[in-house]
Amino acid sequence: MEVVKKIYEMKAISLKARQNGKIIAFVPTMGYFHEGHLSLMREGRRRGDLLIVSLFVNPTQFGPSEDFKKYPRDFQRDHKMAEEAGVDFLFCPEVEEMYPPDHQTIVRVEKLTKGLCGRSRPNHFQGVTTVVNMLFNIVMPQIAIFGEKDFQQLVTVRQMVKDLYMDVEIIGMPTVREQDGLAMSSRNTYLNPKERKAATLLYQSLKKAEQLVIHGEKSVEKIINEMKKILTSDPLVSLDYIQICDTHTLEDVSSIDRGVVIALAAFVGQTRLIDNILIRK
Ligand code: PAF
Image (cartoon, rainbow, N blue to C red; front, side, top):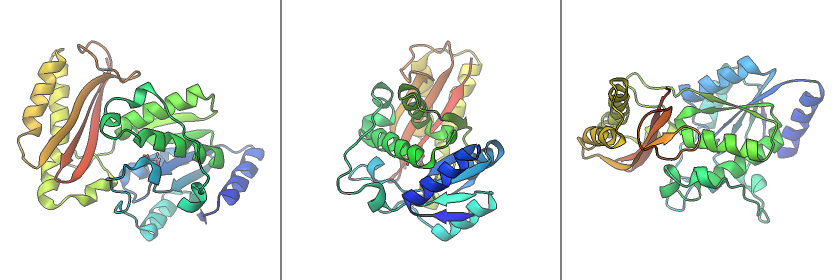
């Protein structure tokens, strides 16, 4: 595996690969890898001739009071894990090169980013779509792989690719979970043991919702109330939102009679976690 730091080097490598008829599979990440990232890399390895992973903690997707500075970073560990996963190129650009002082272009997807996490993180998704666009232009992949855990991100990136006629196929991969159901996330490392235990309530509430739907419940209000009972059973958890949305438009549904995503965000102690479950009908 080769580590690439400079944008011009990454572009030259990708251009040559494309000219040689290679399929580039790309996994954009912010590092601190876990099994979720590795599942995306394995899928990339399976689909592409060349697997490129970016490791870049993108400052523009963090709000002023969010965790950009303390976001977990461990280059040696990530390097080892990426190498073992069969990554060909690990692209690790510097913030200063990605965002020079005269950088002034933003890519924003409008409607899809208003609700869910967009409500409490108003500039988050424009940070994501801007950097993903930049990374796509540098890495030039035919295929890019994202996790379904960040479902709103996945749908938003798909919309951007469609709206801007970008030639990249976006693949979504299922959420990878710990044994007790907690969705894997680099931010789980912030949790102390009590918080880590309380965090399992997020998935428990989603499983409860799924069971209710399986048994025929159609009322969004009833399902959300049952989920709230579980989530509020531990004072360490404070809810940001629960929404039940159409999987394409991300608009709230009034009753469950089609495919939906049940999505939530909650603080466990000081740590904001998200999770969701897809219900296909
Ligand atoms: O999902 C992430 O880790 C980030 O949002 C991404 C897609 C790498 C953009 O910074």
